[in-house]
Length: 535
Image 1 (cartoon, rainbow, N blue to C red):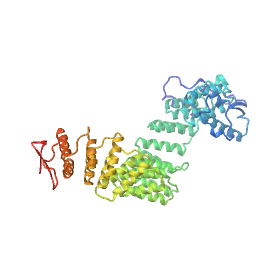
Image 2 (cartoon, rainbow, N blue to C red):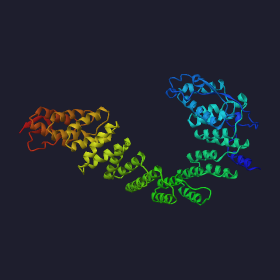
Image 3 (tube, one colour):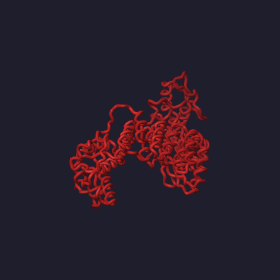
Image 4 (cartoon, rainbow, N blue to C red):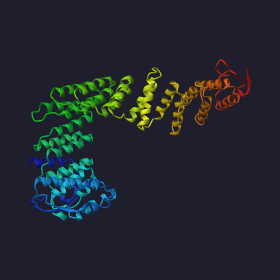
């Protein structure tokens, strides 16, 4: 049995027996050479001054896309330059189709065929591949399901099958992709390494490394040598399922090979595998090795280490990597900074986090909204011990407003507390109103903080307005009520004091019988605020 038939048999034995979903024209092959033909190809001018201004509103129907105007292009009889130009025109057509409403897209294939169709299989392949590249996968499936053998006398070639396999892999229809490979082999076509790599990559993305290894075996039986991209896909799949040792062993075997040499992506994939299982030091050793063999790490390589170090609780190691990264001329991106900043905040390295934040903003990067909230919360909590962090907290809060970021409920509570601690009761009150207006539910302690801050600044009326805001949420704490009573008594506002005490008693809160303060004026007799004596 020939290697091709043997490989087909081995693959087919693992597939279900129902008839394939691919059209009849894809299951047979006619080796008759197609005569050189000219076709009416549907496209639009690409060199007109206003062509770039075309919008989906202008493309109101599929007919307008297909026949405005129609060009005569001979694909098989023209020079290579014109062939390339034809492919560009196909891509331009697909871009215009992509801009159509969904309801029109579904009719585009029928319209195209009625206006000229395909005279060569190359024309069909070009359009099919353009749809796949543009991620218009449903249109590609519809085009692929058309019976081109009966309507146009065309038969799929090796490239047709390769595109079909790529399409099914993108759709994660791996059984159909396998069937496509099976039919390809049965019809005497030999896939190239890129087609096998598409299938291997799809299996690995789904965690089916065993199937990917089967495909590698078929490649070798057919005498097709895996490329470094093939190995990279397999390495990624092994790391994805946690088989890091196997991935490392494969990397070592690739290094020993005289035919293939690892690239930086090869090292990065295995480094990522080590970092995900808490072995960042071994990942760093691979980085050193990559440098020694003359490879240049990219930003993804370094980001892998940032991610690994923070997960292991060692974010400061990431600071060292950042310095090495910049020393080697690799520019950190926003993912680098966000990952490093998140790790520093996770492990409460607040001062290092502030330095990274300022560096990041100085470069012009935006901090992720979630990380920004985390930074602000850390600063507010840290300001309880270090008053100097209040200034940084205020700056971060203002920048969040400038960037129109959402401030989370828990973050608002801490910001208001920070304003109260910084003796800025007015801003605390403003943000309390803003918080309630956003539909958030402040904690009782947040209300208490604002009441106390207002009382300290002698703003009793504002403090009473905050007490009104408690309604339905609870009541001030006993300590807060005591402070407010003292302030009211100092102003001889006994009726307000009586009402405040009555409201507290109704909710079961019994203040200290003698409100705290050197100049207490009111006592409560028999737990009744309506029976008072003024001393």
